[in-house]
Amino acid sequence: ILGMGSRAFMPPSVPKISGIFNMRSRLDADSLLPFLQQPNPHAVIVGGGLLGLELAASLREMNIEVTVIQRSGRFMDRQLDKLGSEMLHHELVDLGIEIFYNDEVSSIYGTERLEGVRLKSGRKIEAQVAVFAIGTTPNTEIAKAAGLEVNRGVVVNDYLQTSDSSIFAAGEIAQWRGEMWGITAAAEHQAEIIAKYIAGDWASYYQGSLS
Picture: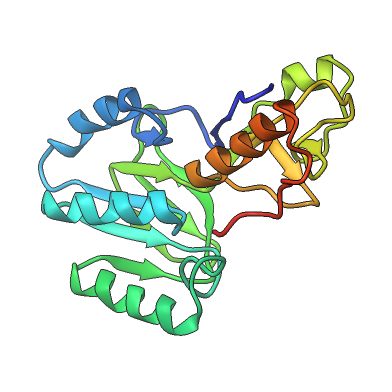
């Protein structure tokens, strides 16, 4: 059973300079903290998913100026309808979070440490911290080396079997009918289907998960 999970995605064009982070583990958070303790820091969060918005809200609790850059026209369009996204938007604005929709980072300023970012819209934002929370990359290297079918993730059937019927995959690496879920609930659901199948219950099969 393969369950290698994923790693935070960082665009290859982003320079490796001080002040730029992914946020995936406790070590990432520990590395970020000293940058938040300098005078009047401004944090830019790239990505308006669960992780990015939770981080934005937490930083505002620390009275840190926060700007969120969202590539699409609203937040969490896979999880929320338009009314839900609008309510979430107002909640974040009430927290004092600056938000730019339909925009993305086009360039980054700074040589040894981050000084700011420029957006595709032309807007320049001075910042000491930038956190990229724009998704994950599945850890499919072992599956590829084993010769299994891999697309975006490891391709599985309704029983979570890979192209080798004696090898299963679950969690953030599993791609079922073109869909992938990056949430714990889906991984637990998939693991349950695998366990039942191995135990002889062929009547239970995976039908997808809720975002």
